[in-house]
Image (cartoon, rainbow, N blue to C red; front, side, top):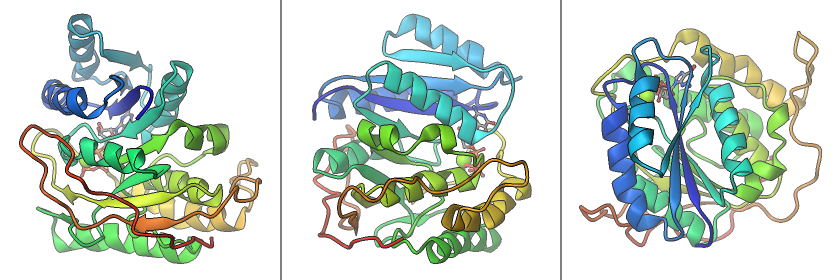
Length: 290
Ligand SMILES: Nc1nc2c(ncn2[C@@H]2O[C@H](COP(=O)(O)OP(=O)(O)OP(=O)(O)O)[C@@H](O)[C@H]2O)c(=O)[nH]1
Ligand SMILES: [Mg+2]
């Protein structure tokens, strides 16, 4: 792999998690990101002091930076700000991860490996063989998996986990998908990014992950955030105008090339030092036809 990997960590009230996550991610990326890495915390003025903790850590570590935003604007806008910052700073790979240990930082190595092996976008996926969810009740499972199924059906994609937020993008993907045009804020944000990437012809691979419920801090998931996806997903597909006059449509450019979305082989054990196991290779083209 050539070039730096940037991990974007959006935070709102993650004081109980931030230090441990940053430490764990550093341990993994030190080994997996062969050309170096940066971790960027994007904090929306957390009242619980997450931003101050991140600042203290950033003063101690040159691989950590903090982007402070003054008000809580939602996950999507926080990620977009982080993406722009990382791209402007020369990132070659940009990664997304929740800051609550729902995503296992050890899996960062597997996502990076998938992109190193040729994918343009690697998605941590709960809904492929080897992936899964622990701790969730039946309702939450139905909402999450049903949401992915609904989006897959409306958008005509083969990707199994469309709502997950554990990803690794090659920079060219983010440069191509018109970040300025992204309007979604909650779950639909994850759907929209993946849809735009597949539409633009980028090779997408699903890497099996096991998602666990947060152990500390409060969920920011709300029914409003989940419901956003219900009405935004058809707009992504059919390109209607939003009520406030902004167009929310897929990118205009035709697919640059075939856009295989392949599932990586079943999860393989990561070693305890977080090194990537040889997983996440594309198993062959399965062209998306959105
Ligand atoms: N900067 C920023 N980060 C946010 C915002 N909302 C959520 N986050 C962060 O985004 C990540 C995912 O949010 P979660 O609260 O875990 O939401 P979730 O994953 O949908 O729900 P749970 O897993 O049930 O907690 C976490 O790191 C949050 O701190 C926001 O408005 N701004
Ligand atoms: Mg979470």
